[in-house]
Amino acid sequence: MSKLNLKILKAPGSRKFNNETKIVDFKGQKKTPRSLWPEAWKRTFYKAYPRFEQVLLPKPEKLDSNLFRALLDRKSDRSFSNNPIKIQDLSNLLCYSGGMKTILNKDKSSQRMYPSAGARYPLEIYPFIFDVEDVKSGVYHYHLKTNSLELVLKGPIKKETMSQFGQPWMKKSHVIIVISAIFDRTEMKYKDRGYRHILTEYGHVTQNFYLVGTALNLGVCSVGGFVDDGLNKMLDIDGIDESVIGVIAIGNKKGDTI
Image (cartoon, rainbow, N blue to C red; front, side, top):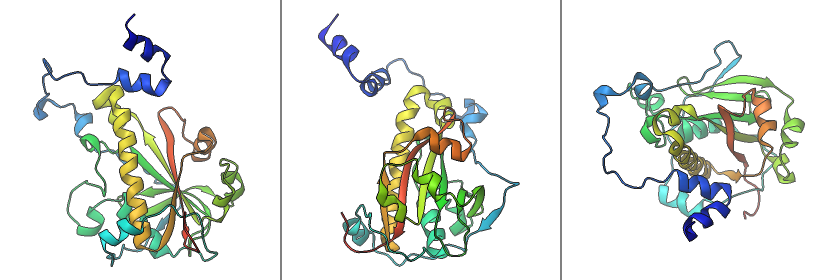
């Protein structure tokens, strides 16, 4: 056994996965013409809860913001005030971070506010709302096409939610954005390597939340530690075909940032 193979054998699972999904070269690979793509590759998927209670959010406002200023000011902010988030700010945050461009320009494009490998869009956004003006506490699904919230689980939900985290500061957050991935949307086209694309896409969306949140004067902090299946259970998803991959805590700013 070569030294390289021995090193791979002893490596953590993440490095083994990285090695096993490498592209070695493009020799002999034939690109499938778009005319021969299966229908599933061309279709954009959307998740919705049509029978659930729905909260229509206000139309997103034009952001009066400077991108350069937002980039410089962007920080992970864990210090939140006691003031609830305004529903207009929530609408702006969700639409500009993870929404559809058609909400703003009324064209027929299915493009969203972030790039996605092959336009597969595997991510779903679930706001866990604790303190937002004119919105009841609960777990919601963000419906892209209508810029609305679909009630998945009625509140109060804060105690159960916080039991999925080991970070007490999160109790002061006003909204927690929980992002899941429906893996097959991407992997049907890109196979195992699609998982890399999904995580890259999560990074794109998270940075959007940071920059838009900064422009709205909201505190934003990405959270990597959580009980995966605890959140999956609250969302009533199986944790296999669809599973939570990341969390972002949000609140009105207060005091210093870290």
